[in-house]
Image 1 (tube, rainbow, N blue to C red):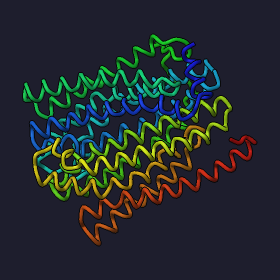
Image 2: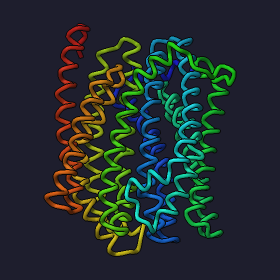
Image 3: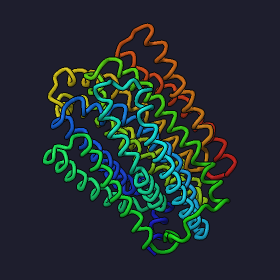
Image 4: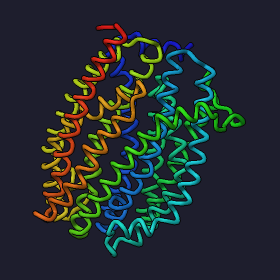
Length: 454
């Protein structure tokens, strides 16, 4: 009964109100997910030193983003299909999708955990990780890979809950996880002086706790959301469709991560101060990505359920409303980050050089966040109707290929941090223009053929 009422809110309710009701729990959940990573950075930066700060947030963070980003993209295929099945009230298909998704999480988590643990030193060397932070980076990254199964289980489970309109429980679980992580960070680092090792162990335990909570919820859910351990296996027809939707998005995430790794490698050549500043900026930059990701998940779920329910007129309406909302919130964030930049960087380190470098980075990048709004929302809307191939191609060419080309050319002309930074606005602008053009083309074709209008 509750599930049906939630579905009706997305497919029948006032769009802007329901987007907000759905968006805020996702935003807060993403905030707490980022917060427990940021707490790691703050604690090691203040109580261990800038080398430890670079170890936790530099090359290690980019490698984690690559692996987790791929799986998150892969899991989007499962969540889109489940949203469509849920909107169409196809209980059997939704149940198969749920159990297939958990099978992917378990197999993927174990496999990538083993591979990542073994390949950690090689990956860090390929990224030009400074010698003084190599040992701590290996420790942090290996422990993270040892618990990556828990990351996969939580991400998949929470994406399934959101796909059917439940964005509150993932929030509650992340709050509990964040609080546990803060306590453990303080205990292991400040009290027991375990350094980077303590931060890594605290993160692993917290992630295991969040995975347990979301799995427990699904095991005790009702109807098509009920998880049964004995039914966790690959269902060939569902697996094919989930991979068809999820793999392109997963590879898109890999492409993003690879370009970020290339940028991190270039940044590392400027020394520990610059690497530490980039690490701290990455945590502030995550504030925008929290908002952007929340809007992207919201519009994908809205479009997916309305597409499954056959309510095509609401797809265009919800996309338009989401664009406006995301743009307004992003503008406020840009103003806040620029105005408070010195204070924000001082939370991570007392080193004046690191703070100055970080502030310069922030001022150059943040005004261009508004442009990225179009990429996130339009890609999310297209993903909701199952259109993933062309958006991945646009992303590949507009962001990944162009960014690598920019780095190669710009660093030869002007080997400076500014030259690296400007790869972001240039590629965002090009990609946004391509997405706008493609979405308008698809919208005209889609709505003309369907015969439905606002």
